[in-house]
Image (cartoon, rainbow, N blue to C red; front, side):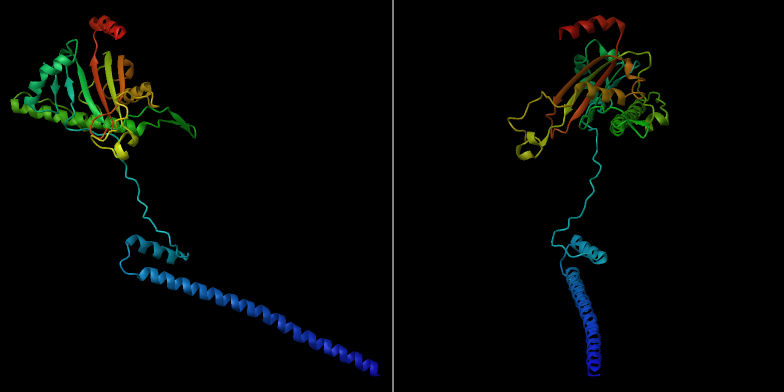
Length: 328
């Protein structure tokens, strides 16, 4: 009987130990959770206080205020790195035209070359000089000469995307045409004002020819053309003293005019030829004589320019033209 009592007492003691151990394990887990929750609440409280301080600091730039507010709303930690305001690059003007640049046209009904960007006195004084510069009596032939400021770029090959063919150079070509169109529009307006002052009959130009679309000056489909293009390439910063472009800041060691850049001269010419399609002439296949020169720009800030002269060719001058090409 005593053995049974001992065994029963031992069982009771074991049950008591189990009962005592169970709450101890639970209490440990609860304590750990409470500690973690306290740590988390303390950390978040500290972060909130820091963020509030960063917002309420006096004489803080707008950029820092906006950055701290964004951090508060987002719930992220405060970083000591300076937050820079992202500024989007503005679309730089690809091409432009200066008032000092020549824009010369000569139609079949004109007696002499007319520079429509200059005043009447300047035109009269320059007619003789322009006649000497242009050979083969171009004063009596249909011609156009203009300058477009901006970095010359080559024509990029057409590409395909998702089964469609597109022109990567379309944006630059439209900007190039836009400059020529604007100069033509201004020139037409000046010509009309000039003839109104003289009391002559006003030239009736359609609104489309002035405000866009087909220009008032263009060559006919049957006319064959001679084109001369001079590309003045934009200089890189390394050509200037302290890499700061500006007039008179070219390094003595920088190249003078001859250029061996990666841009091929034929691709540069293709850009201009394609840009003037269905604009100044019907198609560039009308150009039977092409002379192209590629040099570095040495004017002012050396930003680059494209000088173009197009004139109509006659059968009588072809032999002389071929001979001059072979000799030069």
